[in-house]
Image (tube, rainbow, N blue to C red; front, side, top):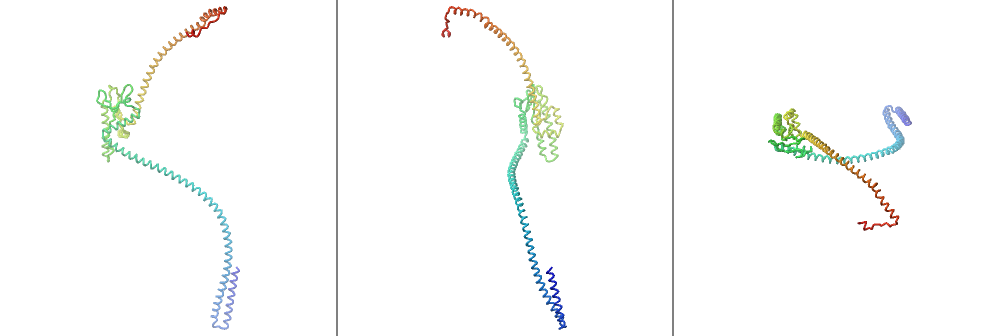
Length: 392
């Protein structure tokens, strides 16, 4: 406020002086009054500017000093406050950094563990993939070998026999004990692949030869027409095979066989395929006394045979045990009779013994006691036998 008042007073003084000078010059020289007034005005204007500039500079200098002092005080206060806040925040930051360091160490440990586990899992996965690749290659080779084997009728027969033998081995059957292999029927021309022994000398025959040609062609066909044709041919082959087996002398009451014969299909997929395509074919086979069986159903049939044989053996063994028990009872009665006789003899001997140690002993001791009394009365010495006499 003081600086503003000084500036106003200076302006008023300069204006008064300018107007006074102009008035004086107007008295002496009216013609040049305007020029003089302009000159005085310009001079006063320059002077006022100098005065105003000096005053402004002075005021600005004082204001700047005050501003700098205030700014310095404010800055010092803010700096002190910021320093305190910075110290407190530094402590919090150090705590957070310590926590972050601890968490980062945990994360690093976890990442290291995960990396090791990943390497281990990746190694196992690689091994499994390699094993799967090898198994796939082996499966491809096996499939190719199987396809080549099925292309030959002889190889198909050998494959069927191998599958049947595997099932027999799992069921616990032994050749020449539970079954015969390719044994000709007496008085007949047929040679069944397998003949199973049943209780009471009954027998069950099985044939393992089965047609696969049209089934393989059906699988390899590319268009629907060929597939339908090969499918019909395959089902016809199956019916024809059932008829061939039924017409052979596999069922012969003279040979003590049962009224049914087994036709083995050495593949579960083909067995299911036949059932899916024609559900009446199985019934047709049963009407002709031919039972179609896959490896699983053959195992079930063999289990029934094994149980029947075991039950028959148990029954026969039980009868034998009962017969033996009858003989044992007869011998036991004879043993008791002889034992009673011996008891009586022992009882009689006991009575004789008691008679000897009582009555007979007393009767013998009486004369001996009298002889001893006479020896003592006569004062005769007792003569002891010598050792030689005792030995004799």
